[in-house]
Image 1 (spheres, rainbow, N blue to C red):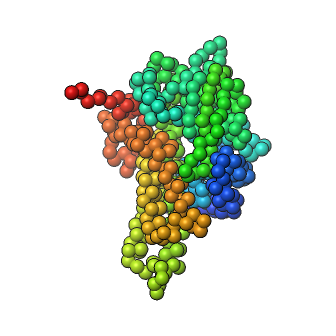
Image 2: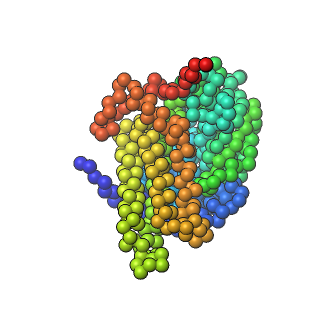
Length: 440
């Protein structure tokens, strides 16, 4: 039976997330967003993070056996929408814990899981942060979109060489969230994607390594000053002969699969955060249209153009939410192997959400541009990030869908029928080798 109703437990989770967002997080958002120093702004939301940790939002997606909440993917989406409706940057801080720690659930050894997941779920300070350290500076070569290229000179450039039982890490990462921690001395643990085989391409040469807080040779530059989602910390990290025990490595030679699956898991989470942001703009604008007359005899909701625009806005939000729920449901059926649907749920809500916020501003007119009196300016700044972060839509997410669909085994009705699709390395790398036009 197809049922879009929430269970009693899910309604309680939604209520708890909504009350947290409105009563604990919201009072901190305005000042933190306006803080010129991005690290200070990040530190200003620490009290809300500690409460979120206490309520289980920071680790609820992790297995119960390690102290996590054991939430389903759909459960996570229900909570995240409520939090992101107040601030998606804060929601991203919670999301990144999952990006960093869920790979251990899927690819880590039992010893690694017991050590790191248990610590993450049982922090007495309620401030445990995990960083997901993949992205690298743009350059030629540079960036991370071609992480799965067969060319060893492309994609991930941070190296980790095995020497005397330790991996020695060198290179630079740029954009990772939460990785510098609350004090710029490092998150409690960073999950870093590195090149462990310099002479091999992205499908063979990448691995993951756990870098604990306080590791010598790791330095954090001043945080990136962003346009929107300012409550989320983004960092410039330098590794100079940083040494980590060999026991901290996992997914040896399969870092590409970790990247693909992690950004698959996060796809519908980022998508539902875009839904929450769009919903916030829509609800504010709908109320505005029902009360603002524009100098006329009645509220502008009575004008056909306004009514039609708000109808389209509502439709886009509903469609986006259900795509995220479908992707989350599919992920729950198939151990988060929802690579194509996860990417769809990341792409569509973020790109449609851009149009939603813009159309809300068109309904409000110039008043929407007043950042002191109305929230739409912030909604727009925050929404701009969704199409370009979290394995950018044009860089990695669309290519993942393409790789699945191009494979000879692909069944175009698989999504409709909730049929499992096994994601394999031969679905990766599509489009990473481009033949330049002939000279002359």
